Structures are given as structure tokens and as C-alpha cells.
Image (cartoon, rainbow, N blue to C red; front, side, top):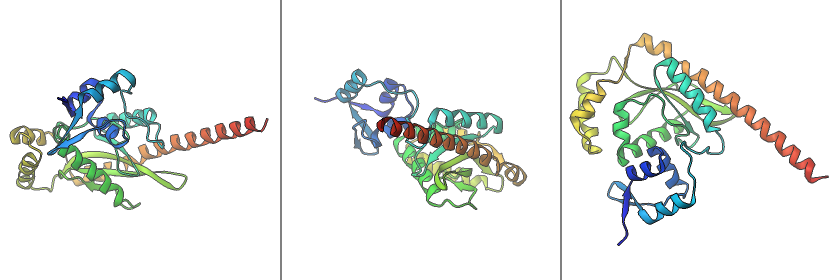
Length: 245
């Protein structure tokens, strides 16, 4: 009888995060079946991959982003701003690993349904994008500052920073929302409520000060994309010259 592994077991075997496992599912590198709200993976298939494929410790580039460079910029931004950060592509998919992720979000994303909800939020951010939109609210009620990443007049993705609360939000409302999230994603309500208390709360003055900061990081990512495009163009020209010799 076939044995099946949980998402957490696959993470531990491949030494990657949960988002990378889901990316492997999406691009076909990993096969899985959904039982209820949980993904399960054939042990024999996973062992075959371990024996035949060397997987990276970080997400692969989606073709538009040199992930290692972008992750470095993101980590630096997060360290300076003291807020979390994430880069998503034009499809709303995570390109990088979240920097300074809150315990609250880690708990939610530890479940398949919670991660699905987060991914749906990122996709909605991209679908609602415009030059005037700088703030979004995720499914869990947390706010994010944002800045579009543009290369050659084409939107490539978005730089997100935040996971914070507005001081004007009523505590009772957030408490009720926390209980709803715990039930929906089968989490311990007490643990999730304690994690919610750790989420930073910003005043209007603080938000006004921070709202434009992701744009600087987005510009830095854009400069890398421009240099990358120019480099690939030079390589193509060299290849064409070689073919004509």
C-alpha cells in the first residue's frame, strides 16, 4: 500500500519552505493529491526526486527575477525598516522568502488553507494594482505598503512591506477576526491571539512616514532587472555573431 507524506515532511526532506513546496506543485516538479484541505505526497515519488534531483535551498527564479539578488535587497530593506517584506510576480506568486515574517503569519501559513488564503491575497493585490494604490489589506486583516516593480514599461511584480495594524482598528473587531481565522484554518485560538498581540500597530503619522519606503526598494529591484535584460541582450548578440561565423 502506498505511503503518503505531509507538506511538512516534504519540507523537512527537501530542506525548503512551504511556499517552495507549493511552487514545485504548480510547475509540475512535484505531484500531490489533496485530501480534504491538506496536500499529501507519494513517498515513493518524493524518494525518487531526492535520489535523482538536486533541489535549491531557495525558490527558483520565475524567469523575470534573479532571486538571490532580489532577496538580498529585500532582506536589507526589512532590516532597516524593521518591517516584513516580500516580492511577488505579475501573477501574484511569491518570488522571495518573506523577510522578518511575523509569528501570526507563520501560524496561518503553516496550514494548507492558510497559505492558499495568503496566496489569494497576493493575487488580488496584483489584480487591483495601479500607480495610486500603495496600501492593501490581506485576508487576515493585516495591512501592507506596496510599490510596483516595472521593467521596460511592463509590470513585473510588486514589492510588499508591512504586516501591521492601524491604530484606528477596534481591538474587539480584530479579536473576533482572529477567532474566525483560527476556526477556518484549524489553529489554536489562544496561540493565534497571542501572536496577533505581537503585530505592530502604526499611527497615521507612522504610516505617512513609511508608505513611500517600498518604492526605493522597488527601484533597486528594477535596476537589477534592467541590468539583467541588458546582459541577456548582449549574450544573444554574441550568440548571433557566433552563428554567422
